Image (tube, rainbow, N blue to C red; front, side, top):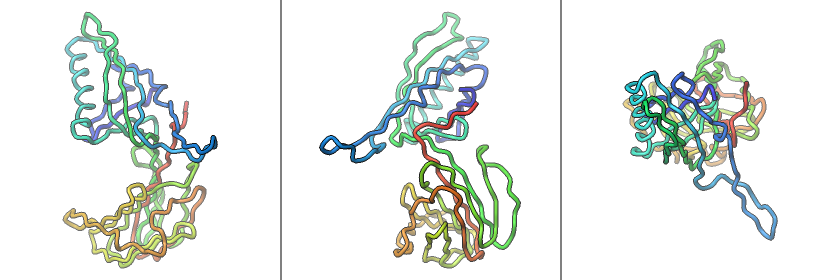
Length: 271
């Protein structure tokens, strides 16, 4: 997989498409749904539990000294996540898979010490490939669109009535970030209201995460305050964003970002 890479929780990166790595990564696309049955009828599908994927990697260098440095770097990048119990991410194109490298089995090692082949076992309790698409809406001004966010689409817009596109197969989880100053900010996505009954000072912001079901106010000094009890109880604030073109409406008195999470059992194939 020419564009495969790994980024650990310290933002250290292994680029498997570099000349020193040869990977056999098609098995990273393997997946399996769990399901429950009742009287021999399928009741539901789910991704609960821990699953594993395999990745075969060969490391080759022009000298033993360079190769040994690569071996150590590979191990330490993976091991840092395990020791911190903070998962890293395998990227294929725009999609990432979150997990840990729990096993490394060495299948061959050259006598010249410059070639090592190993099989990695990757475990995950999320079991999904995710692509993030972000939109930013500014206060009282118009900014033309351009692309950025790890190489993913990033669209800028402003005004009280705009549209976003959710091209996922199903309604999407999201992260909504609302920037101060703002008082009791409200945003409509489609016909659903997302509302928080709180005040934000300049340099403060709210983070609403539908995946973790959390709401935090982040103060100017970085202090995070749980704001879950400030949510509007009449409109479910963690309702997923529907697929298709979605209208966005707000009073244009504050700015905000929204990131949509396209979650799939395997990443999209590309040439």
